[in-house]
Image 1 (cartoon, rainbow over the protein chains, first blue to last red):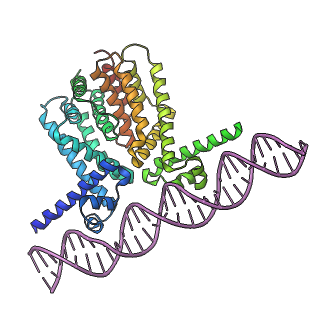
Image 2: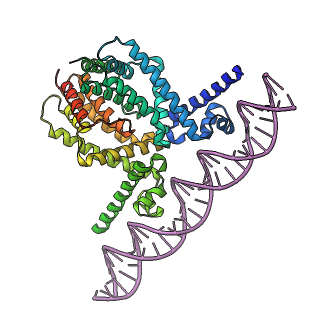
Length: 188
Length: 188
DNA sequence: CCCGCCCGACCGTCCAGACGGTCTTGCCAA
DNA sequence: TTGGCAAGACCGTCTGGACGGTCGGGCGGG
């Protein structure tokens, strides 16, 4: 039974991965149940066995994305020294530190966010809640609220610009932006 | 003949307005030719007379949006005093100064951006070009590049968070964020 | 034997786009 | 001035295809 559960989990995850791949490679409009099933190496009926509707698929996609986001962000928080501006510094690092698996993380987040929002804006409510959580943390960060939220906005901008493929800073520019924002992440 | 041209223009604009309304009120998924035509008070055939395909409609939507964006931004630039940090200050004002018709502008931009990107990510290429133009201007703004791009990222974040309905600062917080960013918009 | 996972054919719906038609408008020749 | 002609604006219908979701069945492990 445990084995079965693991197998099921794997198939579910494979389907979610496949959905993200479809969106990343062919755009939101191409995300159909058939395309997802094909990309996951599963029949359409098989997909619908795991996710009873497209909405259920997108909901799961968003939930996984939020969990990943929360875990990643919290890791950055605990990597920062305690004291005023800790969360602000974590935001900066989260948005601007490139790590091997973070590229794919960004693609995941973008795919989930865009496809869910396109189908029904209400589906990204968990993302809004997570953003509110971070906002609350950053508001009690021991910084002047203007500075703290400016840092958050910048982190949002870096990430969301990537979501739309608008822009992404190269390595050296990222370091310079980081330095500039670090100035805001201290009680100026 | 002139009269005819003006009439045509009006209908085209009405259709574009209608498309934005549909997206704003019912989401990207509800943006069909039929729904747009109905919202514009025009038959489907009439709509297709003005826009030969859905893609043509979305292209026009994006073009109008970019023109509006460019005009609005340039107005903010010329409202700022010359000298280092002018474009950075314009970015801040553009993102954080609420004006009566700017709410609707944001809705327009969001609708055009989301619907075009959902249909085909390549359609928002004009937006990418406009963003690149602003980026170029801000890079030659007489500020350290890190500071300039940090301001740009913050402005992007404020706007794009609004696009997804993630967050929007209230009046007093907006003033505080503005003050914090203004610190970056001067040669620190 | 049976249960859960998975298959794939099938159905109803919706939509993009094509098409043929109608009506208004401007233009020109008589 | 007027009759008629050509063009453009707009309409209503149709169709082919894609998509979400259903259903009955097969298959393998327990």
